[in-house]
Every structure is written in C-alpha cells, then in structure tokens.
Amino acid sequence: MRVVIDTNCLLASIPPKGAYYWLYEAFEQERFEWAISNEILTEYDEKISERYSVRTAHLVLTILTFAPNALFCEPYYNWQLIEEDPDDNKFADLAIAAGVDYLITNDGDFNVLKKTDFPKVTVVSLDEFKVILQAT
Image (cartoon, rainbow, N blue to C red; front, side, top):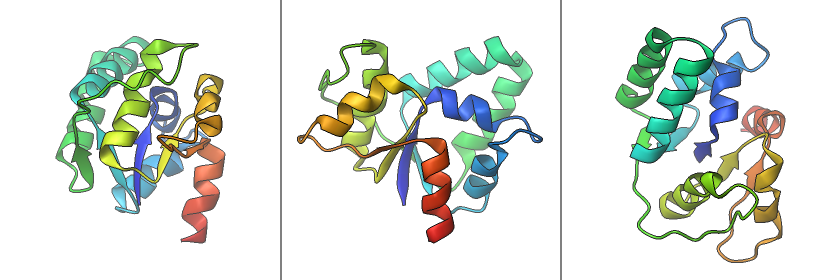
C-alpha cells in the first residue's frame, strides 16, 4: 500500500508516547510505502524544526529518506485542486503522480478532493488509516 502523509499527521506521529506513534511503528514495520517529494521533505524539515527541534528534524528525515519503503517521486504537473490552501496542493499533486492508495491528513482543506472525480485521490484521516492498516 502506497500513501502520501500530510505534515500534520507526521508531526502527530513523532512523540513515542503520543496517540499516533503507531504510524511510525507501522512505517518501520514496512506496512506501507511512504511517497515523498523534495518539496514535501522541505516542509517536513521546516515544521518539525519549528515544533520540536532541528535535531529531531534531522533524525526524522534521516529515518524517512533511508527507509527501504520510502518512495521518492516528483510531480511534474500542478493540478491546483485545493483552492482553500494552495500550499496543500503539493500533497495532492504527489498523490496523483505516485499513484498512491491514500492521502492521509487531518486537515479539512483536503475534503474538496473527496468531491473531485478526476483525478481521483482517496483522502483518509489518521484514525481511518489506522483502521485500514488493522484490516490488512
């Protein structure tokens, strides 16, 4: 299973005693492929550094980039599907380019994708993704 993970979900999965640490554990167990682009890595770095520390950002990005189930892909077309927050389009564009099964986010701005027939991007929350993982 291949996914794109929004920054808010990554941030929630970092603390080992946090409610969403299971996402990191599932990734470590190679239960899914994590699609990433250079633009998304840059945002991850910035937001992790702001919320936690530069050291934490370096550790997380090192784990992510060297993992065998990390999939690097660069979108070459900007679909501009998310008008509420255009900065979120990088996740939708990657989801389309990488042919992912799910775009995982807790951000309501992505809900517009649920109403878009083409190109189809299946958006699920972290909690919904946990149920999907448990079923596989």
